[in-house]
Image 1 (cartoon, helix red, strand yellow):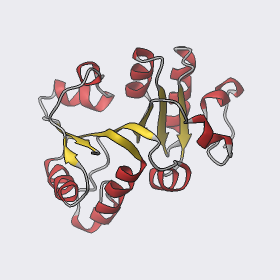
Image 2 (cartoon, one colour):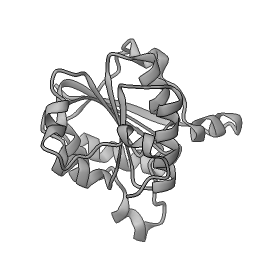
Image 3 (tube, rainbow, N blue to C red):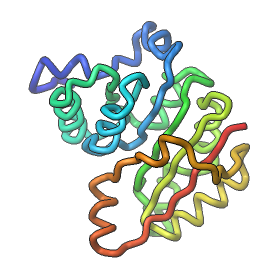
Image 4 (spheres, rainbow, N blue to C red):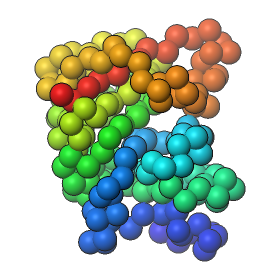
Amino acid sequence: MKLKIKELYKYLINYTSIKFSDSLKNYNVILDIGCGEGEFISRLAYQYPKKKFIGIEIKYGRILKCLKKARALNLSNLEFVISDATIFIDKALPDKSINKIFINNPDPWPKDKHHKNRLLNSDFIQLLHRKLKRKGNVYIKTDDINYFKYIKVNVNNSNFIKDDTKSYIDSFLPSTKFQEFYKKNNKPIYSMKLLKK
């Protein structure tokens, strides 16, 4: 991938490098899967400068906006990956290396024939469980009630437990662009927080 602005390279992870796994050690690592244009993870990274943040996005145009946000805020604790989330998480992330994972408004693929494309299937949820450290959390938000029910079934068949406790970070979670739009239009957001014991 060729970036239009060379100064943005420092915010882009080369996860094929041997050094990548080592760069996660001794950090509280937070992952944003499908980070869009980076508004959510950029705000979190700004609020928590001592934690390490990684945003995953597959679309080049969105990644470019993410990188520009990181540069504008001069964030040294935030990097991005342009990749398919499943491939990156499965092949590049070490097991038990992540503290928190955020998944905001993943594509619900509402038609029955497209359900096979849904990200939050049983295999992917188990993959997330493997990559989390003990007592790690996954935060999931969606505006699609049918997708939410589908996710709940898959979570119930996983090793996760639902986490009803509130942590310090829960009180300061920013909204995504989509979530702000839904709020203005009185559209509900369905959410769950999962815990790895």
